[in-house]
Length: 118
Image 1 (cartoon, rainbow, N blue to C red):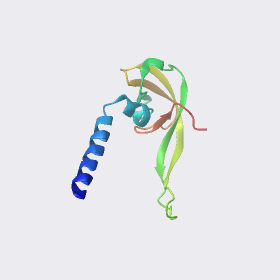
Image 2 (cartoon, rainbow, N blue to C red):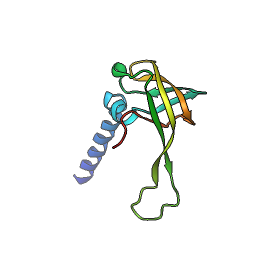
Image 3 (cartoon, rainbow, N blue to C red):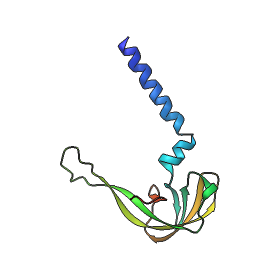
Image 4 (cartoon, rainbow, N blue to C red):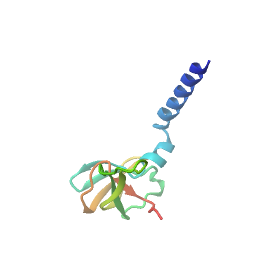
């Protein structure tokens, strides 16, 4: 009985996460701000919802970096590193927009910070 409960729980959680990949929640909270592709100074960025797109606004971009020298147990080796600024451009579709690099070295998978952390 315990094994079947564990299996059912794992399947339910897996379906929840797989189903989330196609939902608005996924774009709003997980993918929003991700640089999807680059072509020179031109980018495609996931903006979650283009209804409130702030065209020509400039945003900071960060990259997740890992420091392998972390040795304290429980300490995270990941941090955010500022890499530049981008200017949002036109709408590609309901979830994506074009952007242009204003400064720095922005790469695919970097994160555009739409709402600065306090």
